[in-house]
Amino acid sequence: MKARSAKAIKNVIASMIFKGGSILISLILVPMTLSYLNPYEYGIWLTLSSVLTWVYIFDIGLGNGLRNKLTEALALNDLKLAKIYVSTSFFSLLILVTTIYLLFILVQSWMNWELILNVDAQKVQNLSYIVIIVFTFFCASFVLRLIGNIYMAYQQPAINDLLSLMANIVSLVLIYLCTIFTEGSLEKVAIIYSAAPVLIFLLAYPVTFWKLKEISPSVYWVRFGYLRELMSLGIQFFIIQMACLILFMTSNLVISQMFGPESVTPYNIAFKYFSLVNTGFTIIINPIWSAITDAYVNKDLIWIRKAMKKLVLIWLGGIVLTMIMVLMSTNVYKVWIGEDIHIPFVLSVLCGFYVSIANWNNIFAYFINGVGKVRLQLYSSIISGVIFFPLAFYFGSVWEIAGILLALCVCLLPSAVWAPIQYWKIINCKATGIWFK
Image 1 (tube, rainbow, N blue to C red):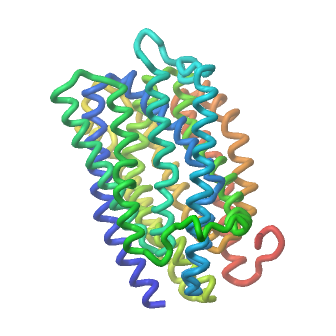
Image 2: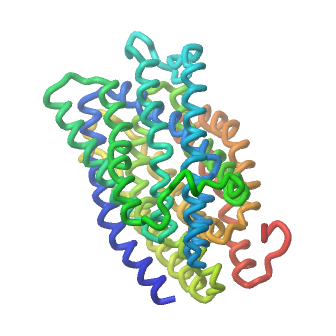
Image 3: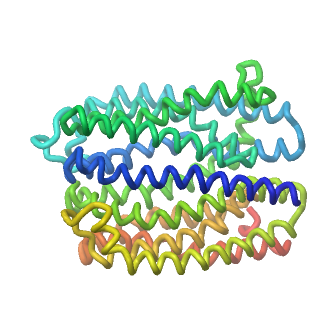
């Protein structure tokens, strides 16, 4: 118990440093990129990257499935099984991403990206070419990012945060050089942002498996028969990821379609500001998922109870911080990005409300994911994904951009009720039926 807690605390402290650096860089990158592009082009990039993020869900949940199964194998000290899980996941994803990329190249010529993103073709040149380049880098990072799931299974999420920090540093340096030596270019920005993570994860791959030789992927250890174990939980994670992606990633596309690409910019600036609270909370709870898996396998429910109580107290502190950020938001925006872009106060209020609900849900989602009882979460995510679009278009037509955020908040509310109930039932050994699937 003490070793698990010490490891979690150590990773939280390290993650605070690495994630803090990433946050600082991302905040600097916003005005820097805005000065290099105009709000219209910047909005296009934000929308395009959101759309292409869909590619990450096509691991069919293998990433999270590997995270849970690898944690279980390590908890039982079964390194042979761990190596099989890693090898099977890596080579299955490699086959999958190659298939996805070839299909994309085949259908790309029939896709009208100007129409999809609601872009004026006169204002942006070579959009299809930019999409192909960015998609290529997204696919390259598809398999490589599995390294992050491995570190999380080892209860070392701080290393994954370090890799993200290094990618952000590369982006910052290259964008800064572009602002000095080149004219504004959406193409250059898109390539830099999408290529930087690929470069870092490509360098991290041999280092990772030199350090973790006992589980390094090998064709010899591929056992496609084990895909069923990985996929039984993984396919549920996949559907949950898809539903969450509909909620969180398509909002940019909805805003672009309803109000134009330039409206994506203020929405994302407000979102990025309040995501500081969400990111900070994620740093704290990130080690919890795999730690809970380890504790649950070893039947250490006392440790789980204590950890969950501490997280609720931290969440309450986050509520206070969020309220302060809402009150300061107008002045913060002026200092951060200047006065050229107006962000309505109601947008800040709703962003604060959204991150508070999201953090509350994440406390219990990480527990539920850790113990692998995700069926109820699966059904709830599907329902939320289905009702988001009609709510977004209705609220958006009434309250404009703020209405999109309101729709997100409404979709999160049901989970805020049932997830704590499921936790209580499982931790007290009273869960039956859907509550224990």
